[in-house]
Amino acid sequence: MGTMEYKIPEYSIKVQIGGLGVMANVFADHYSSVADIIWVVPVVGGVNYPTDLEREPPVPVTILGKVRLVDVFCIPRGPVTMYLLSDELFLKQTATDPYPPRMDDTESLALYSMWNQCIAALFKRTRANLLHIQDYHGALAPLYLLPQVIPCAMSLHNAEFQGMWSTKDAKERALVGSVLNLAEDILSGYVIMGNAANFVHAGATYIKRHQKGVGVVGVSDFYGERAFKRYPALWGLPSVGGIDNPDPKDTDGLADDPAILDEDIRREHKMNAQRFANLDVDPDAELLVFVGRWSFQKGVDLIADLMPKVMAEYPNVQVVCIGPHIDLYGKFAAIKFEQLMEQYPGRIFSKPKFMEIPESLFFGADFVLIPSRDEPFGLVAVEFGRKGVLGIGSKIGGLGKMPGWWYPVESSEVHHLHKQFMRTIRMALSSSPETRYNMRVAAMKQRFGVSNWVRKTQRQHMTAIEASHGASRLPEATPPGINVLSSQRSNAGDSFRSGHHAASETASTYLGPHSFKAKPSMASVASYFSNAKSITRSTTALLLEENTDSIRVRLRDEDYFELSDLSTVNVNEKGKTQFFTDEDGNASYKYSDMLRSLDVKNSTKGLCIDSFLVLCKDDFYETNHKLDWAQQ
Image 1 (cartoon, rainbow, N blue to C red):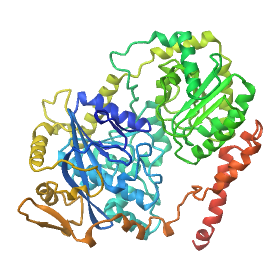
Image 2: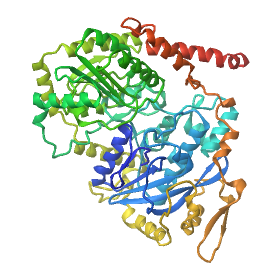
Image 3: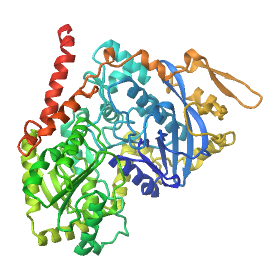
Image 4: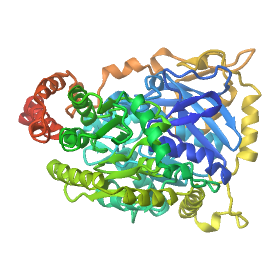
């Protein structure tokens, strides 16, 4: 599998911002009990990686018809083997921002092209048995191995993100194909949906054609069903299944913690949380928290809109909101919370950035706010619920399984959501201590077991393999614990590894771009090129020269892909974004100025975040695309 979020505990490295990162680590920590795992991850900027990692032969990729070599380093971790990819494109991302900020520009397309080509190359190099695709990021990888067909499983952590690179005319289609290094028949047959390159559509189409549509699941039963109904990219499949994410701490030895029900201990945690957030220290206050990504999908704007009303109606309520903003709704919620902190000192704490959450907040809060417009699983509800913090939010997707107050979402209209959310907050705050105690007891006993998830995921993999190759082609004596990701690693894989390491070097500098020039093992690269022409169509640009010490690779300057090559092209004509992004900051400045008059009434009307952004988007399209429409 390949994921852009990961942890390497041995080196205190953590690149993780959401549920996908949590689940990637669950795979490494627990699924490795039944399978050997090949885990591909990128090296990101601002992180201190060890300098003595084992070097593997670089992976050749082709972008815009030119070759680039991506450095590969290896970390063996028992049944998990991590391959770290190092390139200047990856180094532009950070531990708190591991993904490109856009999904419609050329640079992000080039990054995902490199990412998918590397995953495909390493899949072939390690002779793995199955590729597990986590969301859209690596969904193109199997296309680079065609006509060879490989078994694939796909987990949808958040199907809202699919990629939106424009292909509305022949010029854009040709450019997207050149950046992705995919032929027109592959591009049109798998990737393009409507007028855009859609990676979820590519993964779903591959699985539909080559394994009867079997192997795609959402990260909860409800979310799999909802995603299948909601997203046209999945409609070619017969269905989308569901496997509930586990609570990573819910292992077989998990025991109930009676301290969760001790009110004196909870009050002490609450006071520590208040000190952490610079709130008025009051153990009798009602403490509400929001933890997660600040975005439209998570509904953080709804919390900001309702805060003046909540503050006015409940003088003893305090609110803590923590997490990075990842879209305009999160950005404008942060602006609004800044004003709210000034208006309600000692009652509201806002930190719109990624940070470690203190234990006192998990144990000391009374309620966790989860007003998501869409929620694949709802790990936050599980994490807080297991510690006695009751949920207030929407009953949608994977939410509603933990004890709490959950409202149905019958419309996406913002004022309906305001009404439903506020009504539910009132119900929760008016509940009796006895009711809350009983609900905490129930929450503490809820189980989302890791072992159950392992069994279901193993079955997902086996059915994907059977659908891809046919049950008759599986070994007759396959044991229940087959290493479905790389069962050959112990023989063919190890011989490959030992052959490479015999001539490999260790990295002597920080893992950065072009470090492959420090004499890697190139004999294997030469062999790899001869056997992997489906990976790149520019192999003729390589000049292999014999050296007394080793074989090394040299590329002609005009045949080597540099990032500066991207400045000469753009997926979108004239480099113009298709979407309103407030790039100049004018809308932010205007909204901040308007918030000086913020009060209970206008917070959900004229100063409603959604309403303001809709007006900004309308103005943007009118101003920036009026000429385009006229020309069409």
